[in-house]
Image (cartoon, rainbow, N blue to C red; front, side, top):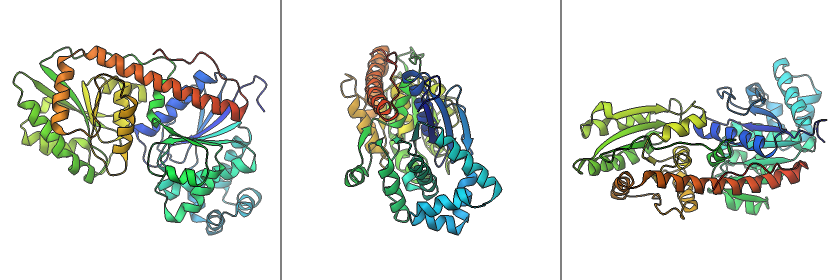
Length: 426
């Protein structure tokens, strides 16, 4: 099953939808996970999105873009019809046995060859079951895995709500999986209905804690007279409008405390969204007459995930509406307060908070502005280093538990032994 040196051969597929720090983080985290748990792993990384860099996915890995497959699937009515009819014999014949567009045929055969030389197919990250253009490629990979008798593992992805057009493809894809380790979100009942073996992940980016060396960040703001707040509003107009008033109230409450000054670090997790977090906060900045020098804009969207954690660590606390910033904040050892978000991120952040409930200074899930302001002031006035140590210790405990779970599943699926040197300090 393995190459002569006993290496585990893994095909890691990710990069769905819009490039963002969250999907980069899970790919980076999983490549680090394999390097720790299965040191001889040969890793191939592929993506359906040509905008992904593939630079963060592990040393010695190779990456490919397969956007041409996607274009051909959507353009060829015969192939598309076979895909949506779940007629995979016809699809296999059309893709691999008949002449097709030269460029696409080249890509498809590369994909088939890579899968054939792989021990495990691991698909990770993204809300791909919401995006027809992504589930089509994922279903194609599942078909090739089934035809070549390769196990399929899913990690860190959102499930549901299913798109009506792609429900049958989604169900086929999920039922091909030997195991699912997915985000806590709507749709878990679908997995139970389909009788898919699954577990609920703490969340995708928490796998960053599996990096080969424990991340070490320390508070650089030693002043108790000032507080630095990381702010991440969201992705679209609705989120910004919903959350700007909360941020404004927090600013007002902090400004009411004499002798305290606040500066704000705007965290951008998605590249070039319809409205940037900085633009959305500009009216708040003007309304409260903030010094522009007290507002810093930080673009995390194409940043190496470890560097992103270091940037988040420059703040004292974080206010976030998306999981990306919330999990990065916890991994940086910084308390995080959750803003509401309509796509379920608020629920996932609350789930994360519950994992940290043993921390004496607990972050607030879906907190009120007065809670956020009061707790932020307590953080600055207290032992920030102790808070950081407690959050990091809990993150390492969660990461170790996830490593044991995933490692055992992968070892069982592949027959490859697990290394015993990956434990992170508690």
